[in-house]
Length: 282
Image (cartoon, rainbow, N blue to C red):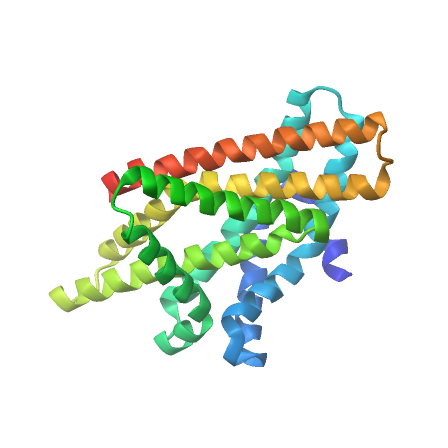
């Protein structure tokens, strides 16, 4: 494949920032192609098209990380090596999310509503569930259970489909982008209605506020999903390449277990921030 030959994990580890622009390119192409070819189902098709573009890179990353597991000794050294992959995958995710936010804010409302129809319905259902739980402990429990469910999906999708977790992560990127973009558009409209003037300073203030609001807990949460997806992918490749019961296979499973545990810790941190810190700030 052309994308597979141009972008590979070794190049991505050396220049992780580049993956931000790659993610923005993939998601932008998916959004406009989805509206052009499958307009009625654009909100889902754009996620599928973006996912398809990312699969070669993700699959090669899983293979590379599995090789590291068999070649590198020491858990700290392994985590340090895995962190390189997680870093450029985070930049890929941020590129996808920021491009969706940009298009949500600048494109006409009719185009936006059609492009993010499914994402808007998802946000509404989440808000209803959270609004019904007044007690913080219950809210924390609900958020943790929901996030753990997504983490399990990431691990299973990666294990069964190799790079399947990228679909879950791209979907999450589109949902976060829809929430952020809606926050920006709503507040800009309110300011314009009050003052009658479009202020550049107000624009930057609202954009910054929206990004901080959703990314304060979003960064550790997405990190957890990437770490879990990476663990599932490593086990998937190991099942193909290694024999059950061998020391190499046991070593890979042990390393993947450490990654899953780390992912759960990040999820706990993200849930605590979302319940106890974000409401105070916003």
